[in-house]
Length: 122
Length: 508
Image (cartoon, rainbow over all chains, first blue to last red; front, side):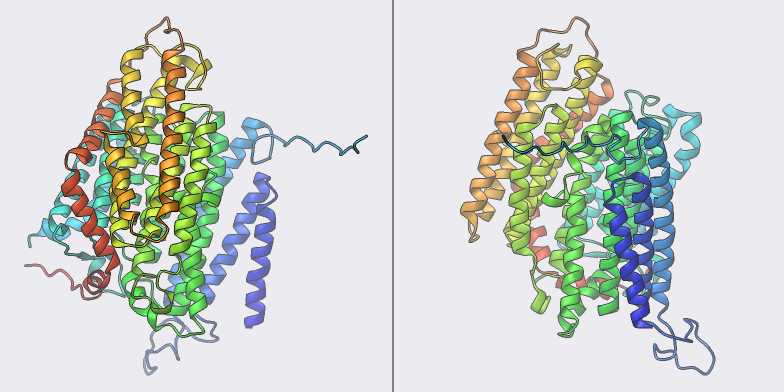
């Protein structure tokens, strides 16, 4: 399970970084979303992976981490999800307005000039 | 303690939150009343800072348990000298921002007073909190309000700058979360005082992870503070902001500096065992490189606002270099330099914004020969005054602050390098500012129509100038206070025990 979760986080991060570097506002939004998924999973995992454990105290079970999942990362992840959701919404509005204003999806608002074909010196 | 005194530490967060929420409703219907109410709340906020200063000036660390949950289970606010200093600086700058926006409460938009309150809440919370995750949350509060402040009534240029600003900061937030959860995963706590107590106990296998988290935090705060490779968003963003907003943004880079100072002295400070001060050399060299980049930027800048933005970058470098020199005296000197540079940069942004309006939309504040702004004498003297202050020429605050920084780093091993970079950057700032001033005010023929300088902008400039003059007049006591703050940072045990031993408030 460790391998599965950690490679999932790694893949999400790699995809997020790749999309971020594309310099198109829509892809940047997607990249940041993927990155925030990766971060949220990472926070979750920092409370250690556990199967069949709930973060709720029960009668007759000693209140220790051996019997329960750590509740704090779950609370942190909830906060992080809410914040990143709101920020993604802000960014989407901004990207849409930028597209409408400049007529280009590039984050600089205009296509960069195409590189001139390299000519050999005579 | 009476109820009000016991709740005093939370007021700098609670007042802007409540007033801001009310202003959202009121701002649309009574814009003038909302601006006045916002101004009153900002005055109350300044009052809170002064009251807290009285409680903590003797070196006590004032803890406040949110919801009466004791540390490390609940979130604790902790107020020491550094936090009070930041509260005070922010309160003055926020007041200047609201005053400058009074010139056209409608031109700045009906939401402006409310947004300013939320921004203030985020800033104050970031300075007061002693919990790393809570620091993240307050960072997000101040960032989302700053997006809104930057972008409402935005023109085309501001839109592009705003998009870059938002993307860079969202990436920073992701890194912040990784660092925070890494620290929780290795040390099992998020309370900064508790973290400080646990860092030296980290096992050898965990130490690289704790160091990696620290380095990530440094990157995140470096983005906010505009340290060299991470701060290239700043010179595009600040000039695009409306002048009153740029005034407030002068304090935003200082949040990053504050967070670096807090985390590097508390969590990775003297008591951190193997990890003590692992970032200090990095801070020094990053700071020096940032000064050089900022200085080159000021020389190359083609508009007054862009020039000011590069000066802000250079000042962030000065602060980082002084913090990275890693003595209590240099930290104290950095803390004296911090209010000076904040006030001076805020004033220069305001002057540049006024010049841009006075010269009309064709020229704005570009450093080109053209129409001199109407009211040339008044604006010119204001420019001269702020330029002298920010460049560090006697007799104004920049001279005192830079002198104290130079004096404080003079007994560190790298002082020749630090001195030469600092002095060269001051010289270059003088060259750049005098070139800009003589081009805009002397070489240009006077403009045919006279645009009045707004009363709000004048009041804001008077406030900032008074604050700058206070730094000169009371330089001795202030330097003493900053030194004490530097020593308090260098010996964080009192902070740690005050936070961890805090007991809840019981109704009398």
